[in-house]
Image (cartoon, rainbow over all chains, first blue to last red; front, side, top):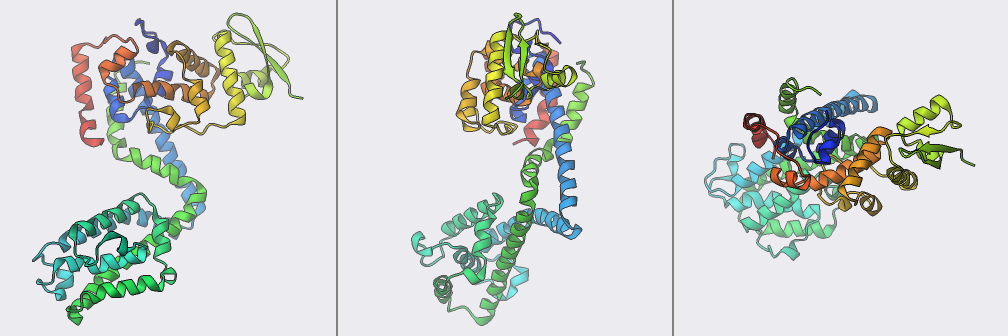
Length: 263
Length: 162
């Protein structure tokens, strides 16, 4: 379709224009529909093709997964991806609620409601963090009861996990590689809580165990990730996940729009 | 010694180039596959100056491969995404840039088409509708009804896309 406008850009054909708009983030690309009729068509046409590309990538990805792994590994991997968000959410709730007084904690009733909430979070979390390689001496947290600092630490940890920077965690969680110095630091921190009863410590330990079962999941995630990397599908998956959330709606919208346009 | 092929530009001028370089063009490759390297290859849609620029790209990419440019662009500065040479290559007047796009499309050279389109996209990225119209000298030819319809159709994106 030729444009009767003077604009050099609009002298390009729809194919070239649509290639351009797919380099623009979708939200802005949709706004570009308001620039002119031809650009409107280019956006719809271009992003429709982009969705086809994404679908093709998804198929390629699934085929690669099926070819490259036994069924169990694929299931493990998918399970891992699904659980990743849940783990973070669970821990978020756990950390946030841990700071609230009088919050019923049905799974850990033995702790008792009068236990200082900071401890509820501090012991398992800080112990985990130290084993992860964090140096408590540099952060001025000798009592480990500062809610703000602990949360900051947790957010940093969560961010790394979200960014899939799991190698660091994987290495740190190998207990055999944890230095004696770190283990003794943990003991020192726990000694700050000597007033706790045995039952309370036991309950807190079960929370710590939860943290470490999380660490096991991180290790598993990392191992599967390492297997997947050589297949080159991780990068593709990252790309796909960027669009998956909006894909269905995009399809509906572009189908409707394109049905009324001639190219 | 590599085989040479003769390309004929829009102006009728002959440009001689080694076969390996021009095989990046799917159009030229299929013409060579069909008729061999003996016959001259007419490229009536590409001017001499643009053809020379295209060949400069083909020669460079042979030695310095360009990775696929990620969509959508992560930065409005192309230099953050691709090597400097490629950024300089498309740092040209709008008219030349669009001619390169048309030539890359006609000759079917995907990496060049993507590079030049990505450059145009950097000129669009982050700009308002009015700014885009101004940058590219575009008149609004949409009716108020069409504009209203587009706004209605775009509503979902406000909620769905962060």
